[in-house]
Image (cartoon, rainbow over all chains, first blue to last red; front, side, top):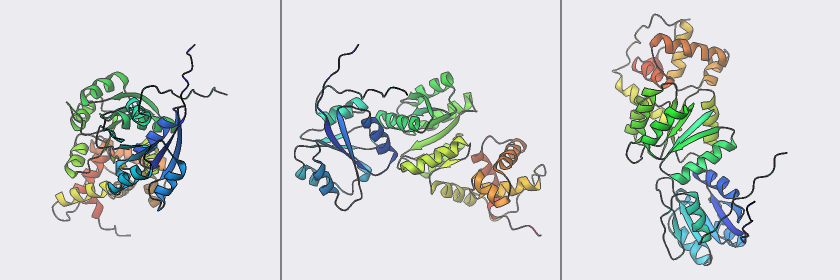
Length: 129
Length: 218
C-alpha cells in the first residue's frame, strides 16, 4: 500500500478561453489532488480583479487568449507571489513567468511549473458505485 | 469509437485524450511523430486518428499517406495549427477525411466529434468553404456535369447537396428522406464512382460543376 504524500493544496486559476487546449488542461489539473482549480473566463472586463479575489499561487493561461503581453505584466504586478504559466498549442514549451523560463513539454513539467518544485500527487479515483 | 492521437505536443495530446475519454471515446494509443504513428496504426487498428501536421522526422501528411496505404479503413482527421491552404489541399489529397484547427472551441470540437462518430465529414468552419472555392476555381467555367449514367436521379440529388457542403442530416432534411437513406445513397455513390471517401466525392462533384447545377425542369 502506497503511503500518502501530504502536500498542501495550491490554488490555481485557469484563465479559460474554452479552447480544446484549455479544456484538456482543465481536466488534467482537476485530477491532481494538490491543486484547487478555479476557472475565470478570459474575456471578462474585470479579469484582473477576479483573479486577485481568488489570491492564486499560480495562473495558467493559453497564449491564444492573451490580448497582448501587457496582460502578463499586469498579472505579475498584481500577483507578485503567483507563477504565471503560459501554454500554447503551437509550441512545445511552457513559459513560466516567475524569475525564470523553463522548457517543459508534458503534464509533469506543467505541474512542476505550477508548484515550483518536485512532488505532485494524482487525485485518487472515486470508487465505483 | 477507438481513437489514436498523433501530436508531438505531449501536453496537448494528454489534454485531448482526457477530453475524448470524458466524451466516451476510447483512446487506444498515442504517438509523438509520424513514424511512430504509422507503426502504432498498424498494431492498434484504430477507427480514427487525430493527426497533427508539423512533427519531427515524418510529418503528418506523409504519415497520413502511409497509414491510408496500409489501412484504408482507418479514418484520419488532421488536427493542426496550420490554416495554410496548401496543407489543407495536401491533406485531402493524402486521404484525410477531415481537417480541424486546434483553435477550435471545446463545444465546436464536441459537435464535430459527434458528427465523426456518424461517419460525417469534419472540417473547421471556413475551411470547407475554402476547399469548395478552390475546386470550383479549378474547374473551367460552369461546364455541364459529365454524365455519370450509372447514378440514379436520387443519387444525383444527394451528390448536389454533398457538393454544397451539406452534412447527412441536412441532406435528409432537404430531400425529405431519412439519414439512413442518405447513408445508403452515399455508399452507392462511392461504389459507382470508385471513390474512397466523402472528401473525394466533394472534389469529384465540384470538378463537374455540381455545386452550380441549374435546377431541373419540373
